[in-house]
View 1 (tube, rainbow, N blue to C red):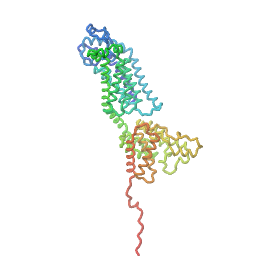
View 2: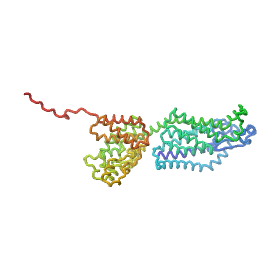
View 3: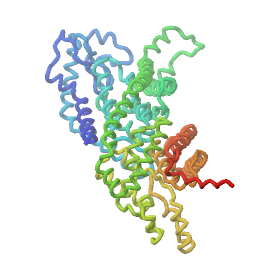
View 4: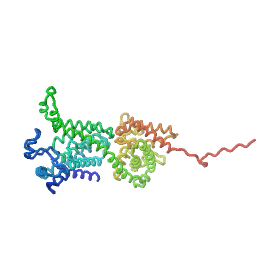
Length: 553
């Protein structure tokens, strides 16, 4: 539902942004002496016949019989008192745009819808090609809406040239919000095409937006801070400026410039500085700086908004009286107790490295919910000491063991659990091998007939820190039950072995865990185990009776 609302909002807002000035001019024609309600811009290259005074002041770069405007250039600035010249320009521009409104609105609507369809297709095919990063579609749609609103507000209420717009704000935020550079490319393509529809419909503007945007995708820092943003924004601005120089520069005029030996004078340098390519390049430098500044300003707000929204959603599932958890408690009591213990360990590890402890706790509650499909197939629910798998073929056993992830996904989706929890249900075993049944099959089946891949979970591997922590906590809790002599030394040996084994199996290759995180995880889990297995003073009735004293001689 949320995604549908965001898609419709993106299409309608962008469509309205393309024609809002035209509709306003038709509804309320401007009057001489009135202040302009917004900046009126040329939406494509535009020229009107000039007056005698304007013709006398023309430069070699503009036609001698017309006043010209580039696509996106301000014709009448915001709050300017409209004079006769402005009125003449407005009438000429209004006639052009009124005709385009009815001729082009179906095309603009089609492009808006098509770009949103392309975005959905892009995100659909990425996992098919092996791209495993988990992305938030509502977040990306919200960023596209925010990007469009910011650009349109600057165009309407300032007279800044389009070169100074924060064109790379979108890729900077997508990368900084950990959505991935490949995701940033697809989002950028959609954002650039949609924005070009209302910024100014020209190939030059579309080309420069794509070049500078793709540069930002390559250079955007993952951890966006003031110090880390300065150099990338400078380089992005320089690429933008250089592109505009190549786009606008008249190379034949450069060839006619005097050589240094012929003597350069201030007039020549002044003419070069006043050339449009020089001023546009200067504005491009401002555009890179404004993009970085806006990204730094908006990033904490976006992160806080995501955290608040996620927390409100997750807290609905923190109650142990949830029908699904009550069903787990009734039908698979051993799994229920295991899940509570995993939640304790996972939350301790999450607190140690700054992960989301609420998501970890609730994800642990539901991570094995699929076991209610066949509770007796799992050791923690075999309370009578009879192991079902002793009588089953290894392939039948592996179908039951790995099946709890598939069943868990189905149950979680039917219960409409949040996507973050569903991801943890799916990823908490990654693509791990189930060694016990693999070795059992090697003993029972003909040599060469057993494939190791048949005894692995389907995955995917953990895509987030929370999924990796849940994988560790799940394995540690289960293994700790088999320790003969629980103690800190044995706990540390166990936890370290489990973590190292998963690293060697590349289970954490698709999420971000550095060595400091791993060290903190091990110590926090060991501390939590030690607290859980704490010793108690034996009560008098638990103590063995003391032997009777011998009678004296």
